[in-house]
Length: 347
Image (cartoon, one colour):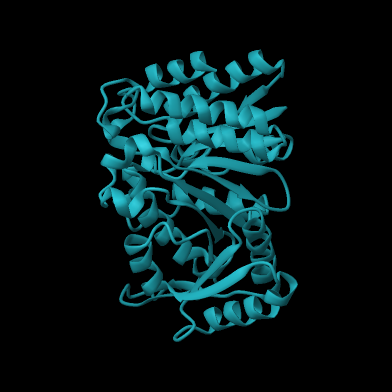
């Protein structure tokens, strides 16, 4: 399998390095061969070639079977509202050019980490759900957008087409069929025209999936219910910006952003990445949690049909967590590299 590695910024290179260690252990155990090609993206690419997603990187991704991605972001750009080129522009362009219209983010509560959750144990025990976020439409990609020349007014538009909504809903319905058969559609249909289109199309598709129970929640109510009843949810589908916010909220339930992987799938090659950011304060210190990136590698293998291999990674991660081989964000004192080595050796 040809795997494109996009380490990106901040802790990205460190966590991707540990995921590669684990993939190499899988290759030895199961007699596979993984070929890696590393390419630039984000602030690192801006510094090198002035473009956060260079054409050469896009070519590497297109010619690979899957993409393993680290993180994008740099305080130099966050603190400069007038910057013309930003790392995040590369991420958005990558999603669009690769046709990655769906982001899949699982949330699973590890029993050994229940005491790390900010919520009470009885509230989070057994939480196991998947968020399906539309990734290439909505306000993040809407046109027109801009600012007036006097700097006093700015505008962004939120646009969705039937095709964009139908394809993400079909994916979410199909995923629900493989789980508890409960699909929650999150929108703001009482206010937004785009949300009313989402709800209309979801109701039109319901008869095609009679075995799936569907409920609808306004996004503000969903934000509360995720905290009050996290174990209720099975598959949650929503538009781009709502999904961005809700999945970050939900990720805290598990006790650490450093635990949650994600997959971005669509028309071309699929991309796998941890949901956390570049955490620049920790860059180079060997303290970042590599678990989310390692679990993203497990999702990569499962997506390509290597279910046993993915399960082997998950078992090794759970073993590390149970044994207390974790980084400081989970209350441990192990280094990034030590966690990766432990997981690889257990495999």
